[in-house]
Structure formats: structure tokens, C-alpha cells
Amino acid sequence: MEEVLIQQGYRNQVEKARTVIINYAIEELKGVVEISLNQDVVDHYHDWNLPNNTGIMMFVLDERVGRECMPEDHVNLKLLESEVARISLLVEKVPDQIKLYPLSKTLYVIERKGILVPIEKSLIQKGFADELKMTKDELEKSHFHRNGKFEEVFQTSVKDIFIDWNFKEDKSYMVFILDNESSVILKTKG
Image (cartoon, rainbow, N blue to C red; front, top):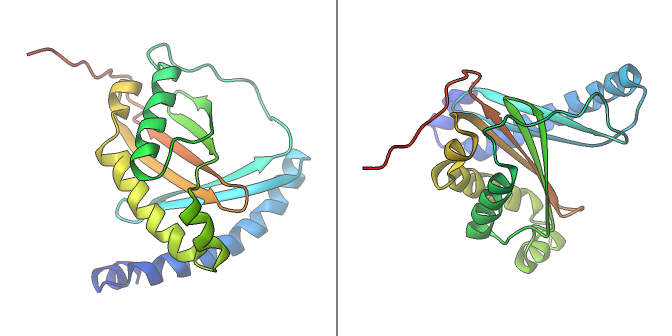
């Protein structure tokens, strides 16, 4: 059904319907996560790549769970932060704060705080948050995919990039899903 609607030019309606359904599912899952981990879920995020038929749900907990994961040796975190800042500047502004969370060798979460510019804040106050989110989703993702040099940063291919925002808190979370092959991309001069 979604494919047909997207082909007919109703992508925004598909995204709105999916968001309603996913938010309902997240509320159900939130309780399971809280009981299973014995922690409160303080926030949640989700994003979908409709062409790839992939998606992600994230729950932000009040305390850290599990062990600290070290990034792969070939991932330069300063370079990753710099590239996230560079692409963010192309579509809005450099975030006031960028935090990197390598969760595994194929999963990196980036938290950006202080990302909204005054016109975006005004649109949110005037009730255009949904329209802004759809526009940011399309614009940011296209820039991060098209203009980002993330394969060079990670030295492997990036399978997916997911982004979601919390306008009230003026922050967003990005998730990079890397190819699980251990091949490293090497660039040659010439």
C-alpha cells in the first residue's frame, strides 16, 4: 500500500500515517523496555528509509546500560565529528554540541544539540513542526548521503543513515549503520 501511495505522489501522507502507527508501537514498547531494563525511557526517536524498507527505533534511557564500546581503530572520531558539523552547516548550522556514541563496529549514534535556527524555531511556534520535520528529513538526509564523506571517515560503506529530531529540546539523533564486511575502502591518488 505504501509503495503505491509513494508512486502516486503521496509520500507525505505515507510518512504521517507511518509516524502515527510507529508512535503507538513505541508507547507499547516503551513499557517493555522500562520493565526489561529496570530504567525509565526519557525520550524516543525513529526514522525510516522508505526506498530501502529499513528503519530504526531508539530509546534514550535515564542511565547508561552495558559496557562502553570502543570505536574501530580506523575510525577517526574527530574527523567524524567534523564531517557531521560540516554537513549540518550546509543545511542549517553547526550544532552547539556534538556527542558521538560508537555502539558497535557497525553502529554509531550521534547526538546533535543546538541545531535549530531562528526561522525554524518560529515555524515550530506557529504550529508548522510537522511540515518542518518532513522538510528537514528530506533535506538533511539527502545532504548527508550525497555530500558526506562518511565512507572515507569510517573506511567502509555506509548502509543507512537515520535522523530524527526533538524540536522541543533542540536536538537530534543520527544513526550510521555500516557495512558489516571488514573491508576497508582505500583511496589511491591518481
